[in-house]
Image (tube, rainbow, N blue to C red):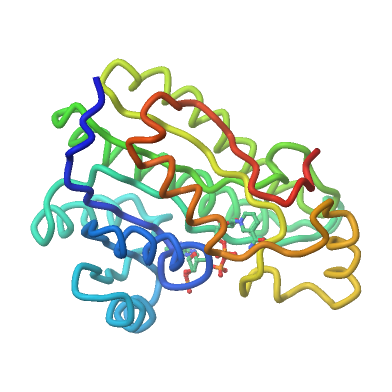
Length: 245
Ligand code: NDP
């Protein structure tokens, strides 16, 4: 049975800017209590103050399991038990495999994949007790189809999808859904690193002929946490203007 009247207490990792910020804004506008975390307290506090009084910023490095456990304790004290978790924090360190340093591989796996394990483990207990929870993992179309120059990023994003499908099976009977969103080319500081030629080459391959906005991803994340998505779990939904077709 779905519990549609639950008060949403949301954690968006990497919520200080980009897609995470847009997710936090969407949840805040719907009346949820929203915690955002980021590496920099200054950035998250600034973002939180812009998004309203039901948003609070926390400095936490999601690659640090102790920091993650501490973060969940702080949110519990400030807002209550997290029942919507958006594992959004992510980085890329793109280079060809033959040039990839151990640190390029490890930091991407640690930030994009291990962090989701730490956060889901910290969140699951409270969600199981409430018998309601929504987990959304920010994957990528690169996790669906791979990309030369991004072996580390692709492995982390494909890992997130398989991790989520497995966790979805573990938690489904407790009314907790676990889904992945797979953005294509979205205009954020991550994609601003690309050269104009690279951007134009990607847009040329997008059937809709344009880049996506963080808000277009956020709306799908929010949908997956809404009553309208109560029977969706283990899914990986592209938000990519058709790029992954
Ligand atoms: P941004 O680089 O704009 O934002 C990433 C956020 O993650 C920042 O707030 C950053 O914090 C935070 N972050 C990074 N490392 C950590 C950490 N160790 N602990 C806590 N927070 C951290 O990226 P986007 O908004 O573009 O991307 C968001 C997610 O969407 C990522 O997972 C990305 O892989 C995914 N994605 C993005 C696409 C795109 O086209 N933009 C396409 C497909 C997927 P700080 O400011 O402190 O560095």
